[in-house]
Picture 1 (cartoon, protein in one colour):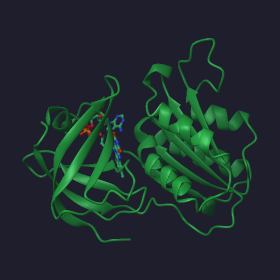
Picture 2 (cartoon, helix red, strand yellow):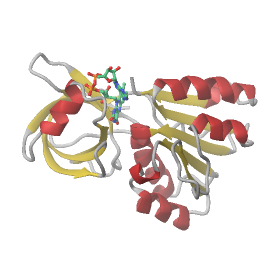
Picture 3 (cartoon, helix red, strand yellow):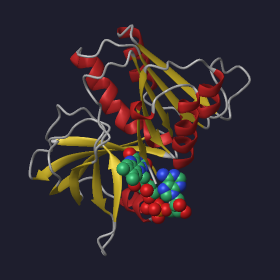
Picture 4 (cartoon, protein in one colour):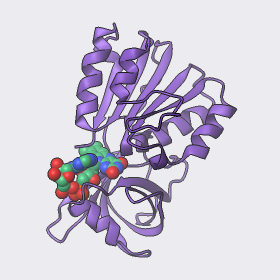
Length: 236
Ligand SMILES: Cc1cc2nc3c(=O)[nH]c(=O)nc-3n(C[C@H](O)[C@H](O)[C@H](O)COP(=O)(O)OP(=O)(O)OC[C@H]3O[C@@H](n4cnc5c(N)ncnc54)[C@H](O)[C@@H]3O)c2cc1C
């Protein structure tokens, strides 16, 4: 893993999926490259006092001169406001790459299970795209993604393309306020995992809100998963 360094990047693009989730694309200005492992994050200075907020990189690591983040702006605090007000071309100060929530290659587990809530999907986009497209990982992989409304889901084409192109990848959104016709799991992602048989000999990667992480960390050992196989990143 590369040590974090002070960097500058300018906002190149912004894509609002809805009122809550926005993807920001940055181009590095100093230095010009960021070498990171999928799952790592950047720590962005969000006010004049030097306050920082962390955002997982959601783009693939091959793009070394640029990176994307996916932000849930609904907390509405200093970080959310800073990013909402950021103009195209404006420069930010950041520290990166940060974090140890990266894929543990070479494990003997038979399957890989990724569990996200909300913006916790961000590091998994980078991780799963890399694992599948590099072709190094052939074990069955399932991505569970808990969201409130079906209309809030984004990157759907990408997940569906991956599921069609790679027989070992399954995409499983879980909707807490689902319409009656919703064919998959409804409720919380934890409800979905507790109702279904989950693979015991699997590596689990959890990312999102603290409540989900705590609940799934309690549930999985009850189902026989050893804690060494559970990796997680809490978003606050
Ligand atoms: C390692 C790491 C990676 C992260 N990656 C991402 C990411 O990829 N995308 C992303 O959107 N966020 C991510 N976060 C969360 C992000 O850093 C901020 O904490 C979050 O955006 C809120 O910042 P804020 O300044 O807007 O709100 P704050 O001023 O920090 O908080 C405002 C209010 O909202 C509550 N709150 C704080 N965070 C959340 C939250 N995530 N959901 C709901 N309520 C919250 C607080 O308790 C407080 O009441 C990550 C956090 C960590 C630790």
